[in-house]
Image 1: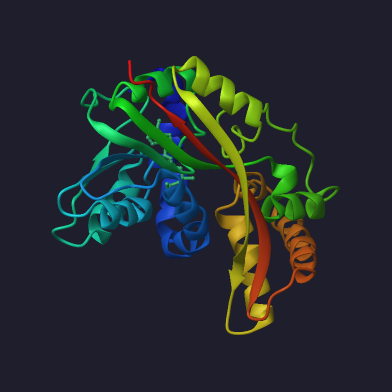
Image 2 (image 1 turned 180 degrees about the vertical axis):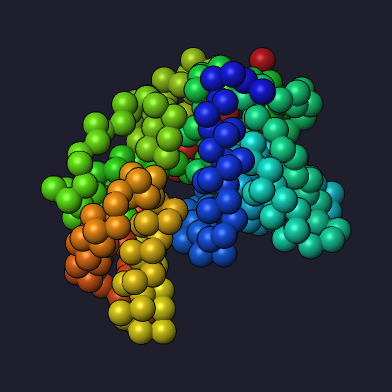
Length: 287
Ligand SMILES: C[S@@+](CC[C@H](N)C(=O)[O-])C[C@H]1O[C@@H](n2cnc3c(N)ncnc32)[C@H](O)[C@@H]1O
């Protein structure tokens, strides 16, 4: 296990992993539109072999398996034991998919084997992204392709921008994360993504914006949907940790402010929020 990913392993095996398992169905529903866009960009064909990096509970691996069929194969790898446990539990029998607990940046992967290196929001957490992509590239066949979806910057993603603006002045400000620190928004800078892939040996790099409105909150009534969006922010969003550390009265004020911010978003029995991503594709050179 690469030492520089030790914090991520601890987090995704512990707190974040457990929270993602608890909210797996909701998160899968939200991420689906982005994963499908990345799968279209990957264009998996029947019989192809796919490596799904940071596969989490495996929804994208199962979608990919349906595309490559029984003559193909999908290997889903993730550092999180609880998430791989959920992926195995959700995979129907006879699906051409295998799930492994592994750090994709350093695990022994079969060389020159895969047609596609795929990820749905699972490649932004490497301590050494260039090293990780160089390592994973060696598992691709010559001419093989990479396709993944990652978030653009926080400022473009209302599901995090709105709550951050709402809690300003209520909880003490934290320094904005270094844009190169591993985390959900570390691939927000398109130039950085291109530099990483180029340095890792890929060519033919394309990075295209893909935006979608997602139901960040859902419920039987509009009020219940807004409560649900607040809960997602407090439980699984990037602000969850900072909010968890606050005393109850501050959390209550923050909750009311976030609720008011979400109430301004459209939706009937939902709170629709804009998500902004990059769909990234590249090739492993033929020689
Ligand atoms: C934002 S979640 C996305 C999970 C899943 N792809 C999905 O869309 O539901 C990021 C995932 O990347 C995994 N991850 C982080 N670093 C990793 C690494 N070095 N190797 C493999 N998986 C990693 C985490 O455990 C987590 O499951």
